[in-house]
Image (cartoon, rainbow, N blue to C red):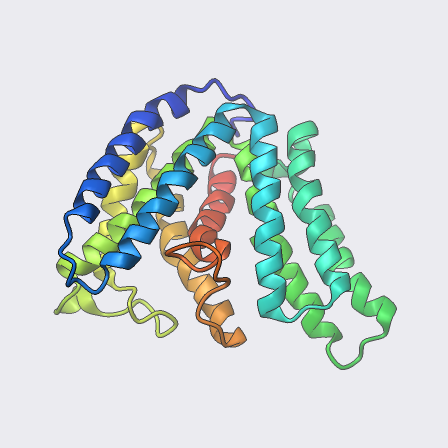
Amino acid sequence: MSGVVFAGEAVGRAVPLVAGALGASGIAVAALPSRLAMRAELRKRWRTWAIAAPVFLGTLFLGAGGAFALAAALGVTAVGEYVRMAGLPRAEYAVLLVAAVVLPALAWLVPAAVDARAVDLRVVTLLLVVAALPALLAGDHERGFTRCARTVFALLWIPLPLTGLVVLGDTAVAVGLAVALGDVGAWCGGMALGRSGGLARPLSPLSPSKTWAGVLGAAGATAVALGAVGAFTPVLWVAVLIGCVLGDLLESMVKREAGVKDAGSWLPGFGGLLDRIDSLLLALLLAMVVTA
């Protein structure tokens, strides 16, 4: 585990790559013909990226304190979207909000508390008790189990992975960049290779547009991104790739059961925050495990 050392080297290496990618993609999007159906959507996404990328890199460049602020802000927003989809009561919402702030704070102030090696039976037990407490105290015999299960899932899916922005140090920069470019690579791979043949087969009925061609595109893009910032290792690459591929499917499963298309509607071109960071969440969690 790299700890909470933010030398800024990864950010310094990432800035030219991000600037080049935004510049090239901006020119490409601007040159799209007006008759193209996806033109407006792609322009919205590019504008969102143009704002999100400097915020992500800038906050991590500030060090562990900036990483904590970013993790807490993302966690609070994502928890709100999840609670609406899962239909959880206010008590569980409060538990998740507290966790979204407290866990990154512990990662900042007491790094050993959320080190991947410390996530043992004690931590699992604490998460289970905290998640079950509201339903137990309310005596909810109709939905208590569902409430507890959905809260435990949320704790493992949102606040805990976001502590990786703090404890992974400069590796968090590499993971974030790789996930972002991996999503782009998956889209390009799907468009170029996913028209027909075996590579056009969907990964899962949960998201028919996600194909094996997209996996190949994501594999190439994540490898390039990690290599560009000097963070490539086979194990980290596999962790990030799995996050890119399965993270989106994981959120699709949640949305399908909730009967919604997007987790929100406020983020231009993407829907909600969870629609944007679903792959990042799983990638950060896996990165903490493989670098422990």
